[in-house]
Amino acid sequence: MIKGWLLGAALTALLLAGSWFLLRPPAGSGPVTLFQWQDYMEQPFLAGYEKATGEKPAITIFADEDEAFSKMRAGFRPDVMGPCYYEFPRWQEAGLLAPVDVTRLKNWNKLSPTLRNLPGISAGPGKVWFVPHYWGNTSLTVRTDLAPEYAKSQSWDILFDPKYKGRVSVMDGVDDTVPFIGRMAGVDAYDMSETGWRRIQAKLRELVPQLRFVSSDDTALAQGLASGELVAAMSWRTTFSALNREHKPVAYLTPPGGIFTYVCGLVMHKDPSNEAKALALIDSALSDDAAVYTIEHIGDEPANMEAMARVPDSVFQNLGIQRDLETFLKGGIFQRRLKDKEKIVSAWTEIRSGMQ
Image 1 (cartoon, rainbow, N blue to C red):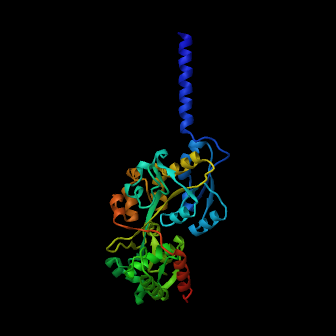
Image 2: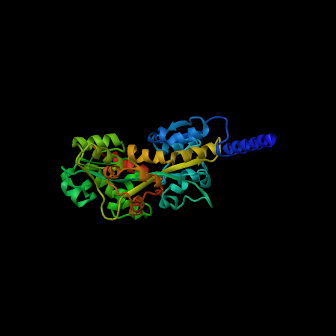
Image 3: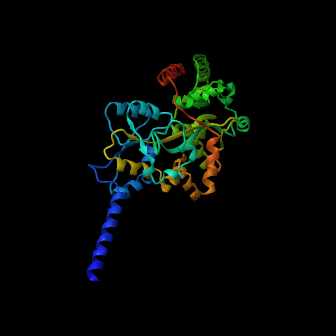
């Protein structure tokens, strides 16, 4: 009996050890590398990976996706990268990506169904090219005390109002500004003819003399609005949230037809140094704690909707959004890939050069 008990205990221990080994990513030559925006390098996004592997990932920050793309084309090989939805197809077509097996992500089913089914991300059953991580909006933040008529009307026309010439701003990135101004010109920038593109360019040339400056720097935009140097600025919701938290008199405009929604995510390199660790890093960024940190400290909205039950109403109120994020998402316009982006970038750069 004693020998049988010892044998049984030994077998049980072996089985448990085997189960632990199957769950834990196998050791590789070293930690995997995360290539990401700065805000998304913080500890809440890495904690799950560190717990699963017993090591910290290597991290490299990129300032914009063009820079990231060029660096990878030149030979830099990270394991997990963080582009947005409008950008990842370029990386995929360049042969830089491998599909992600979502059946190995324990947090995948916590993500918004709308985001899990974004057009173009599927790579076949159980696999995607792009794992949604977080999302946000692009609209105008307006000083309600300085331009009350626009806070009331919710109109983007303030950008072209002579009354506010030199006191408005737009963003420098074409992925934000061109679809935005295209909508004001009555053109869908994601499906435009040459005639439509000429209309957008004419509208951009009309816009430039109105502008105080062009910037996608949250800090510069927030400071300009807070001081009154700017009356209205095209911005992400994070800018509005920061000012609203400081009790500045601001509104985030939501005109009829909805506002633009960006979605950023995670992708895996075509030749990861350790696929299991790369998947552990992606899963870590989708965790409940990471999702709560995203909405409470960054001001973006996480793809992980399940974790939002932990977030107090005051956070949603500060952001100016409803708790029913799934319905809110469906009412927006998802930013997509711009065709002939290099031509658009060149044109916008030339048009902006005319600013005094």
